[in-house]
Length: 323
Image (cartoon, rainbow, N blue to C red):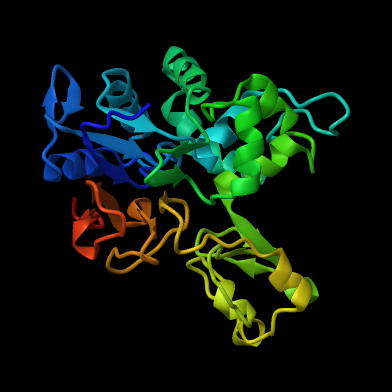
């Protein structure tokens, strides 16, 4: 699938920030030729979540799609591409749902900007939905791996038996409407990550305005002791929760990505600060571009351990009040 003669630029969540993506590609040495961003000897690898939230969603999707079509890039599926497919895919009979992703006010809010920007371009929207089916849920290139949120080797090995290239079809998306099914478990784990329920019925309202009863957890800590040791999201846990010891069963249920595994790149998690590795074999490249953070890439050549000097990014400035 990947050209071994090329080096790669792995790019985090775009979320409709097309102008910022063009700035990043330009910074990385890509040039727009024949309407497509190209590099003489590198390929871009996108970690999904190209749509939703941002000001130029349609343009961002065209940039990435056209690069993929021209052999200049590959893209994996993010939870927002999956959400878009779920929005239009009827649920399986007996699932208790009308669509895979029910048309609730909360779900509508997340996809509203995308639907608004495509309202006058229904043909484009149809074509992009078809393209989303071609995006694999993961890439395993041997010396490095890509997944939007979480690498779960047990689930990925099972998925490979049905879909060796990681690309799932409409039937798989439809099957994911059934809670607890294999398809639902795969999509939730690989595209949304691991989480844990807050204790004592607590809920938290995050910086994105959504209220949740769960918090996102790390999937690589070797010996965590408290809830605070495993939280992995921009919104901090209350101190009383963060200091709560993990039970033996909670520890046993945690997923771990060992340090001797190949390099792993994820997006999804809305990091902040200066881009850097999480561990020597793990990097998250989502630095909240759509919230005026950074759009980040990692320039991968042939290293087997991450180099903090190979992160490249552009800052996203807030618009001035008088502009």
